[in-house]
Amino acid sequence: MEAIPRISNRLLSYSSLNPISKIRINPFLHFTPSQIPICPNSFSPARFPPKTLNFSSSADRSRLSTPRAGWLLGLGQKGQKSTLPEIVKAGDPVLHEPAREVDPNEIGSEKIQKIVDDMISVMRDAPGVGLAAPQLGVPLKIIVLEDTKEYISYAPKEEIKSQDRRAFDLLVLVNPVLKKKSNRTAFFFEGCLSVDGYRAVVERYLDVEVRGLDRYGQLIKVDASGWQARILQHECDHLDGTLYVDKMVPRTFRTVENLNLPLPIGCPKLGARPAR
Image (cartoon, rainbow, N blue to C red; front, side):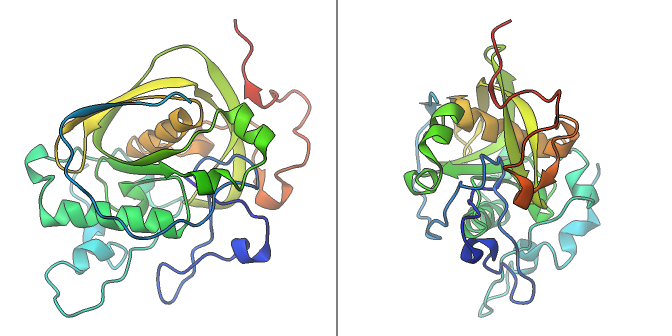
């Protein structure tokens, strides 16, 4: 999910994940052109015991052995500078087919840990607030997400309030299972790192629960609401082969440059849906 506001020409040009091709910034869920800043690339994981986090606010693919899957090509190649994989774009079959579950016994393997590390780095470099493994051409059920105070500071205060957006630390979820906790929903623009340069309004639940395993194979449960709940739904959709454009409100799809133009007559207003 995209996370950076396009408030200057500097932000419009993304850092290159590949020495040859440049990736443009596309926040996963778009909040408006003022969203997420670039965050640090460092990540020093520490082992955590089983925990519960509470926040308010088909078949094997040959694609894994293509240049796109840089994480695989880099394994076992000592002395060579690794290159982060590129973000896969809409139209690639890996984004439109269900991902496979990760064998819990393999979570601690070098391969899976490398995938997780690359996902975190790519998400932060993009920059974005969430990323799913299929977006790197890896058809496995793994997602990472993170929203920081720095990212949030780039958005207007009224937008932050209406989206119920709050900072949360890095989360890594393997084989996540999501379920809604209430019927409350809201309409907001979303964007995606795999659908570069566009946004559309999507209705999402405001309260969800996600259960899965962390990067060390420990059970984890996340109770989320507001913007974090939206990010979780967006990323879990990727694992089902669904993009936000598959769920968008008709006639709200637009370029980033036209994001602030009025919505067509008959489209729902942005924000929480009135209680029914």
